Length: 349
Image (cartoon, rainbow, N blue to C red):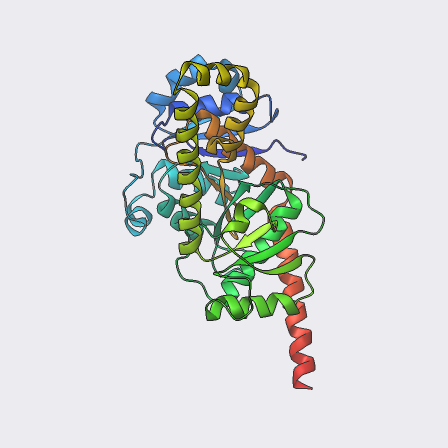
């Protein structure tokens, strides 16, 4: 890119802010040299932190903001009263063209409401969707929506499929991603009206991905498809179930490996393999949920994350910008609309 890429950071968002935001940027300096940062937050707290990280200080600029959106604040209230908050001003920087992307670990509902209000949606997109990447037996799978839209119709699901496919192709490097709709069974007769109609639309489209039909919950970890599409209610339940199961597995594994002297000796011998396993199931390694469909890049980090998790969210934001994901979404929506226009003309004779 001809000009340095700039990331806008809501430095006050999250349980461990602002320390973890500065530490996260420090972790990203070697990974993304040349990237600059706008830090929105309380200057009196951020300035001493930057003094501890000279390398961060050289690539970051503080924008003093006193107000902070609370973790339990209603999105409508935050949108109305939080115009001078660190979250809103960080988003405004993207809307004004000062930054290429915004990253926050703050209130999810408030972030979505503000980002949609300021950045608007891409042409053809009715509702943005929260997407993230799951580790699977085959590699990585994109899943959306994860909570932005509790109720969805068939058009929303089709739009999610397109956005997820573009992300999978652009960021994960898959030439022709496979897409599936999450359902209670693989049979065509199962599911509600929305998923059935969405499946019919995708089967008739001439888009660049392969529509695999319906997939079930067990297919998430198996990596049956590259993109899993669902409504926000189901997606959020699935996400929390996966996270809870991962923590339960880690708990049982730790308990088993410390249950006796022999078990502890075995754990010592298996140390390298266990460290690899811990890294693979560590949710911080996969932090960074994307708000796909916005006319700008917005990434949400987990509210309880630490510097490692937030640094991965920053990495996701950089990749979304550099891979020009929004431009790809625009192109695929234009193709879908063209297909519908041709099919309508043929149908009407």
